[in-house]
Image 1: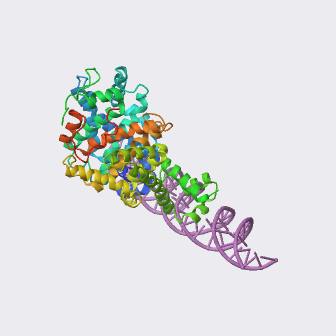
Image 2 (image 1 turned 60 degrees about the vertical axis):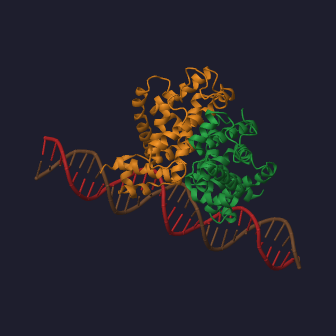
Image 3 (image 1 turned 135 degrees about the vertical axis):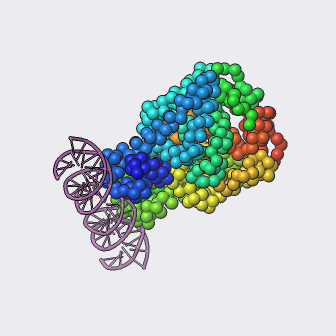
Length: 226
Length: 226
DNA sequence: ACCTCAGTCTACCGATCGGTAGGCTGGGCC
DNA sequence: GGCCCAGCCTACCGATCGGTAGACTGAGGT
């Protein structure tokens, strides 16, 4: 058995369930099936284990991105496909969502830095989406794209994290694709509501569904009325 | 100085910032300005302190409800005013939002029970809103109103909690009323998106803004287009 | 046959955890 | 004045924390 790999897996589970401070190295060692010092042979400290767990998660997340960014090269529905794939990724294993939600709460700055280095394409696309929207006058101008990244991550993971921890409710983790897709569409709407100026919002929600033919939109082009 | 009261206040701050497991009794005692055993004179254990902190928060929350439920006795915009006042309550002091978000993650069942007993009117209105919507065929029938309560709480607090912990972003905690009101309107939309069937949703978002003249709607009647 | 060394173990460290025992003190009551 | 007791204190408890030292083992290389 690959102890290092198994440790990462079990630590992910336990950190997600009980939090970093609520999980002792002994807890992890017990479920891995080794003694505590063996963990510290593979990871020099508990905090390095935490960083490794987070980084491993972010790497996996990052790994699913190039494929779809290639597929959706058209550029316009990048945002939509990114959101859909992201939701799917976190719904597949809700521990991922819980883990990130805890990190956002406990160490937001550390997480932001790690996102920047490990999931850089994702961060770039989101920030670009916001910036283009600002240029088009549709997104609140005072919104800092960089700072808003964590809010978008929060938006994605919080619903999944809680829904799964209830093990009932709106997002059953059993069947992934269908609910994940629906959830992603909801999130796209929500993201807009949070981002857009009241005027732009009124055009979308109040008037006709298609808001305006700016380059920046088209997020919903693939799937408009459910 | 009222040590008990000050302890509740500081424990709320620290639990919200660092979590229950990340906060020691000594941490709390230090900022309160007493020694550790003095805390245990007022609270028989650390866990009783936690329960007291949560209960105190829920009591305060509950205290703001009767006023507005009286005011919005018409019955139709109860849901909207409830959401608005709730958002305002949590935006006033984002530690409240962070604290509840942590409780949802760590002890969902315990929190659900406490909500049921300490914020019963709120829980009732939300559950009723969902039930009426189900009777009208607008809300997904397989949604368990009881189980969904925590998701609604999560929906409200997660955005506020993270936004505030970033101390920048979409919800600056400085000026409360205006952003809180806007946020509440967004939340009402989001709640609908999560709750409603695709058909009901299409009527609202795709077609005309006023969906259908059921008794259950009117949530947005007071404030439709921003 | 011998050496090396990755990997795991037992035994232990000081610090800190939540919690307890019991003493001191000062204001209110008789 | 004498008593009582709420409220805070110092001193201490065993358990557990993250982390270290050093012995053991077994597979691979020479």
